Image (tube, rainbow, N blue to C red; front, side, top):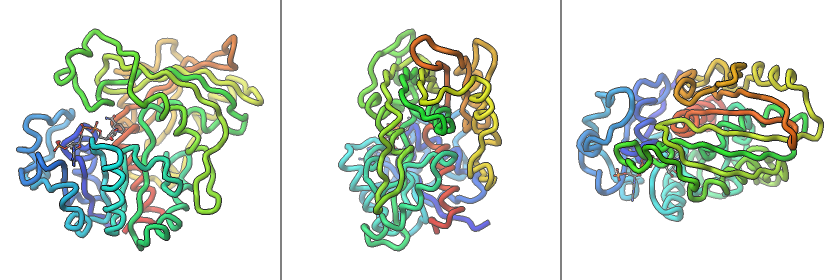
Length: 359
Ligand SMILES: NC(=O)c1ccc[n+]([C@@H]2O[C@H](COP(=O)([O-])OP(=O)(O)OC[C@H]3O[C@@H](n4cnc5c(N)ncnc54)[C@H](OP(=O)(O)O)[C@@H]3O)[C@@H](O)[C@H]2O)c1
């Protein structure tokens, strides 16, 4: 398999560190660049982290001594050294939009974890098992940007990585209305209990912008390509409440769903447990063997027990039962910085390499 040179933009952050752990030994991607803000630029990666490394695995030795570049000032230098960059930065939205455009225009593929381009009509937002065909929009985007190789592809928000994977495979029954409450980990805000001690023994009933993303982004996933754009679907209709809870990693969702044609419980479970997508068929390096795991026990899935299932790339579901107002209710869980962020980004990059869009 061909090797691709990869950069990590925002390498010192919570998602960036996940990219570092996932890519240090990746069979397809060689990390050639680490970049962050001007505060970190010019330092070795270890110096720039200044004790902030918070991954369960040690800081990869081959990355520790690399000199961190300036994500904005060094775009051309970085683009020359990389076939693709993984981007997860904490900057103003318009600054991120410009930064990612600059990389794409410098002929680099941008795999973005940021929200800035999620609603740019010719930028695909891909969950590799669900809508891999949305990559076919990339030639239209390249035409608009005037690039041969450069483009931007985005990951959806981490909140919906738990419930959209469970609902999308049920599309044949016409998913009509969905009410969802998410219980989101503090790493979703780039924090740990050390850096956010107020979250110990606490719940905060507000996450800025999250409910809008949780309601709107799924419609782009369900959307279709027409006239060089991804046109969002009109349904399902989503309503969401997003709540920050005192767990380190793992977003849980309590879901209520109504269908045009109500399936049976067994039909749903059969679809979930039998579901497999292009990443499984292509045997992509980061693909979980089984995308959806269903638990029959009433007290499962649990955040601490199941967030790391299949290296944090599988989605768990449980407690599927009839509801008095909707057709069904159930619980979903996914790891927010693995499947929901860096791991999902790496899998999307593997898919785009396999489809011939990178390199
Ligand atoms: N955490 C999650 O679960 C999650 C999930 C999905 C998506 N996301 C998205 O991913 C992005 C990053 O989130 P995070 O949680 O990793 O944030 P974070 O931990 O706060 O990290 C932010 C990163 O951005 C860099 N940065 C800040 N200002 C910059 C500038 N002016 N120029 C270049 N780099 C700059 C920081 O570098 P320095 O260290 O040099 O300051 C750091 O590497 C956000 O857009 C977030 O919405 C996060």
